[in-house]
Length: 126
Image (tube, rainbow, N blue to C red; front, side, top):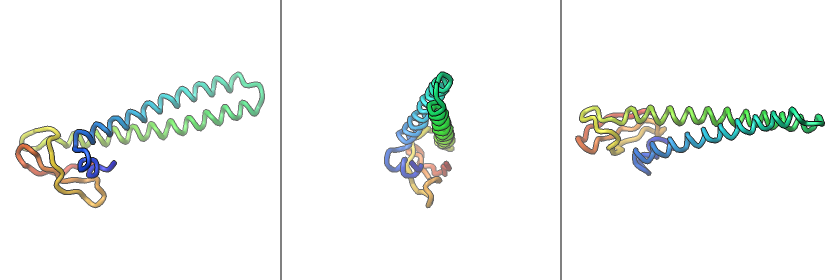
């Protein structure tokens, strides 16, 4: 979910929580893919026919590709959420994550927010 849409719909703290949960779900999928890779390699080593061995190796390749995609997605979501969270402190009063969305860029990746405590405005980029 884009930053502007997430803050508008859920608020900053809920957006951040959802991004972390989504990224860690991808990490869990990486773990499952690793188990699939190890299982298919084990099955390939004890396969009797070439067809069984080929299907086990194809499963290994598919699990590897899915695992790499999930790992890349995990790192992207986590780094984006952390980069935005590091910018969520008000520069004036140092209040964390108590902000209102004031304006969003066209692509939704950059937002202007205002502090709820001191009403200072600053820009957050994702």
